[in-house]
Image (cartoon, rainbow, N blue to C red; front, side, top):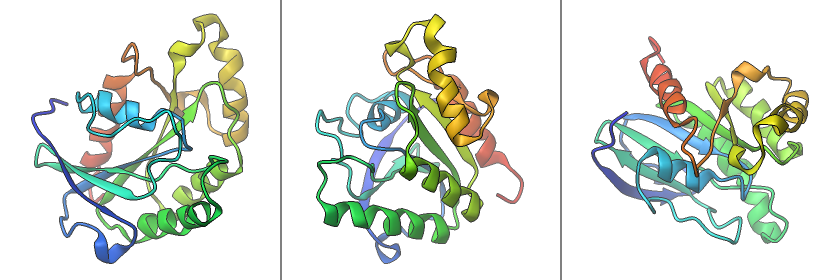
Length: 197
């Protein structure tokens, strides 16, 4: 994927605020501090298309970006961070579920897992929602540069057990080394190309 242009479209919390565009959409989801902003910035080859923060939970809206005038990248709110106010926590579920259930041009959801963390209830809940909504899911394990290659199997095993997904379902990604970037783009492009999707 060659990125020629990126443009922020708008932020939204409900369907009547979503962009009217019917371009294919790929959404990115994951718990706070999973490396979602870093992954998006690497994929689109921009240093700060999506702002990264040392304070997890900053993304509390659904953010839409036009890529190359060809498709829309959607940054979904992070979830699961303890210091986010309860009112915000209670909003992420309905906000995400409504988007997943109503957005007809959603072609794939890239769901992130930190290689150093065992998936928790919110992660499994979101996986279940994606399956219910029929949204093709691209699971990605992030921050793999944080552990040695010899540790990968041991660290990844609890993720496989919690999600009940096979290893081959996942792409491994590092924002630092860019490992996995091309594979993730290939999987996104494959989702866009599915007949009738």
